Length: 571
Image (cartoon, rainbow, N blue to C red; front, top):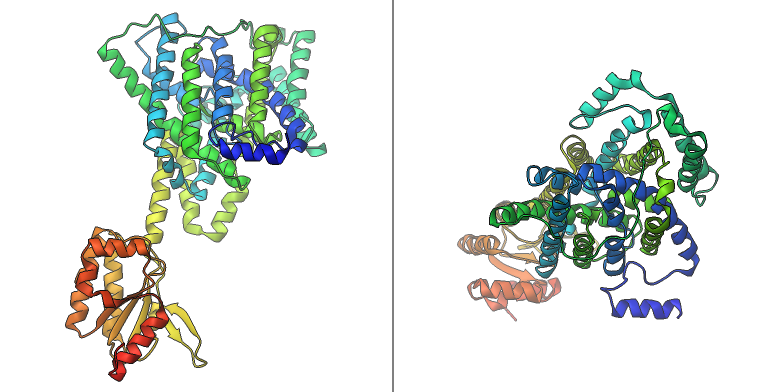
């Protein structure tokens, strides 16, 4: 099948394999190698997340088996990697405190139920099309969000790289604790960490296609086996049980209405984080590569992924910024890479769990540390500061909230700040009036010029939707133009070219403005009103009030009608 045919098939079935098709034959081998490298990095990472979640170690591997494959097939993002995530794992473990003993069969059953409940919320969100929330994540807050995640992740890996206990409530306390414990550094662990970083960075400097992380992981396992690094105090992963997950509904959990309500609350909290974090990560990488994705299709993919998690004995999965960056930094550009990771995970579960026992934990910490550093977009922050200083502070605040308060709070703040930026832009639009220069050419100038298109006729262009936040500004600006006009105005024309909505408050303002202008002997007319906006004005009874003859298709029509009225021969 040719690439063109594959693309046509993908377009006909946008909900299936949109993250894989169309295949780029020149990138297939690169994506497969990236998937192999991703598996080498993600497998120990997701096992680490089981400590946060309170789940058995093997369930971490289950999160990147069936759930990852389901999202790869049914999601739309070509970059988002779905699997175990620290934010949702932490919410789950905190919520299940007191319900069951961590890692017990009952606890695992509750985790599966939570995954199914979260899936239900995601599917419901798709049905009511909540994917649009991702549209409120501006590039500015995305840069700040990923920068904050990167710093938080990097700081969290320092204890593992030094071989010290670490610990603390947040990055600041983490750093303080690390400094207090730095005298306990295990130099063999530190040597492993430095070696991993040198190999990965060195390979990238030579050729970015060299899978440095994969080389470092395999080399560290071999070295640990041959030298027995554990005898030198280097922490290793230890025994990892193998085998495939059992498929079926979670069983063994005590259930009643009170517990179900508690589980629903936990699942809803995780759903909010999944919705926002996955959308934020997908949007960030789609923006980076000038690609499109569908938030609503991704909701289906995430819902199916969590159904897969709930039915395969593991815990909630989420779009992961760290694993997505792992894939991206190793050249992966489609979900073919994540399917490769799922296949490798299957092979590991069946045949290769024993070698993982020798993996030094410092390898994982070093790899994740570098990923965190890559997520810090210093160049993007500088660019924002140079071009839009106000938005730089928005990005910085987002980053600081992610670092010092939490990822989920940072995401919610990112959405709120994006809405505020949008409101700020629409609250005070840069409106203009039509001016005719001495040569007869027409052009728009700032309203401060108080220019008239023809003596007695002023054309005013409003550069935004008319809604409650800017209605007062609109009214004040129009009255100021009318009251200060020299010569006095006979007609005032609103050029509605850029107006795509008139809400209830704005319609009321227009009604009041019409009456005030009428008292001053100024006729209010409109030009270039779109059909939808005309319908809104009709429903608001503004058309009947102002008069149907006050609406003109073009500015030229307004000028002709005005000249005719002034000459005493109205058209």
